[in-house]
Image 1 (cartoon, rainbow, N blue to C red):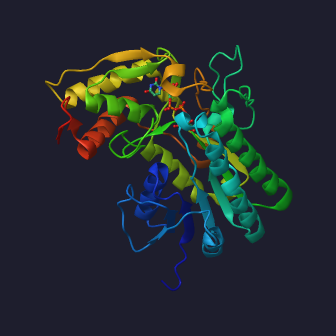
Image 2 (cartoon, rainbow, N blue to C red):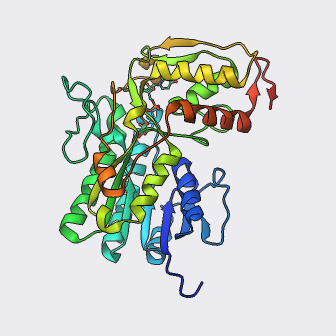
Length: 353
Ligand code: UGA
């Protein structure tokens, strides 16, 4: 459209879980022209005149160059973001989180494009002993990763190194950047259901959904006392959209996006999901939970953190960020979405919708 002054934003990984929700939200706002680049787009249902879909791999020749040439902002969301891979395919995890994105950082620096990079709350690693469940702060908390033989931290380390590269290019060579640290975003279309549309182990929400759909007990790794703070995907993408509308405030910043009010143990999350599933599928026997060891579930080299609570004071100050959705509100929406998409597999393997 001639004279169109809307910001041109390219979302790398625009067909993934976070990417597809973000692309939809940016298109709905009417404030952006959006290019979505990914290898698959099964999760992206929106189509709009302001959206261009580009099926491509970011490692293919010319893809990043063209994206940086044609857009003012690049949002990078690509990664192998799944703990079961960190100790089983660590080389690919490191390559996707670091090597594949170094050329993007260089290009954005050279062309003066705003790079909005999705890092991870995993960079905080394990809480310092005795830190008594302190919320994690972007510019103050120490980043404490385990020894090298604990391959769990391969992802966190690669993501941390990329953060350090982006920061250095920003401070010393003028790269306009914002680093976003998402804290356990959950919502419809997250991950995959093993045996249905993917293989291996997804993250906890999809693991529990897989068990519920199959009528199997929900696995609690090491008993499930570890805690996470879950944020609903709509609250998360609202935060990213707000960042994109406030470059002057957000450039040069690292920003946590999470929901400290939704801090819960994994065992209690399982309890809530069983209750929601029972309410949506009355009459179906509920499978309960089962304790599994981390070694049996993930294999050697796995490690965990006991809790991870975001401090969101900075996001509130910069963009007025206030996530609103509690677990009791989001879980019925999410479980219903999985039921609609996958149906319920009966113990005989038949699927009813
Ligand atoms: C993951 C990723 O590593 C991060 O990159 C990402 O930022 C983060 O999720 C996120 O979603 O933001 P983690 O929270 O450990 O980290 O991932 P989950 O697989 O969702 O596991 C959460 C907890 O549940 C872990 O303690 C895990 O051991 C446990 N779990 C997982 C179970 O008890 N049962 C399961 O079936 C699966």
